[in-house]
Image 1: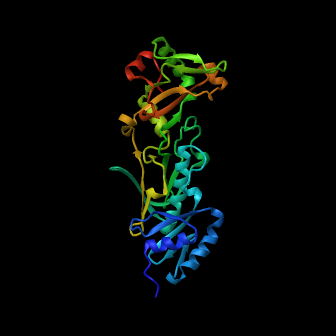
Image 2: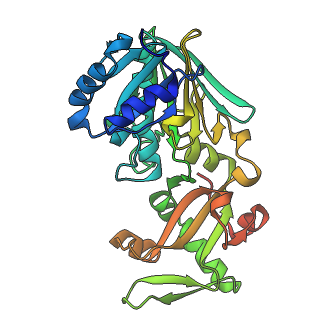
Image 3: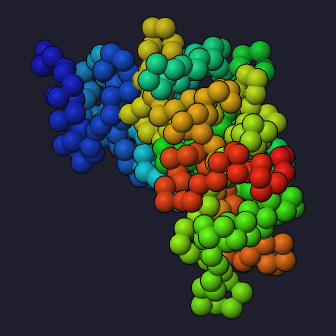
Length: 332
């Protein structure tokens, strides 16, 4: 009769084959991931099946084994490591892959619950997650007005829109186009120069400018700008912005209740969530890569306009709402 199978014993067997296990992913701690190159996953399955045959392993789905009381899920390295791209893109890729794998594990239907401290966002009867692709954002929502980059597809066919922000993804939108067309960008910079808040100098390349004294200018966003930059036209009323890195260890699966719990940093479901450190500000900062002809014609090459959370404005010269009114900045 084989020795009773425990987690350390099973991990030791797998480690002896040259694979490292980590990250429990079920609430009962009876499952874990094994990461490897996608090209070796089929071979690894055969090796693990053979090495654990005395415990009567069973392949319960592609690249996933039930061995005694444990579930071992083989995962490609890209599900763990950051693919090329921005923080938000990384969160999207991880979320899409991991969520759908766990839904399969639960039989094709699950409740998905995001948790950030005491705040929760819960969606029942989810059958899959999908990237919005061309249906979603373009230039961070500016132009299309759409912000969702993921959808939760429900059993009845309806969808719940999500905007995923990487753990450090405090940028909500690029406002180059909107603030250039409205004249707000140039009006704000010229006012700040006149008031001695900053001044412009060429950065070595003729026609490329940078702010000095203050490396950036930050102005409080209006209520309309908060809604436009954060939620666009598609997130409200039933969707959410999810701020978190979507690492595998933040996913927990309860096989009894069929609930997938995802820990994240913050959840935003209304404009009221954007206060204090999470308030939305319009930031004008140096970025010498911004050198389009339109930028040079309507503003200054070398400067960029973003909507960000207050936590991403450190070191800026702040322009508050009363000053915004005096400057005469237009609302969206």
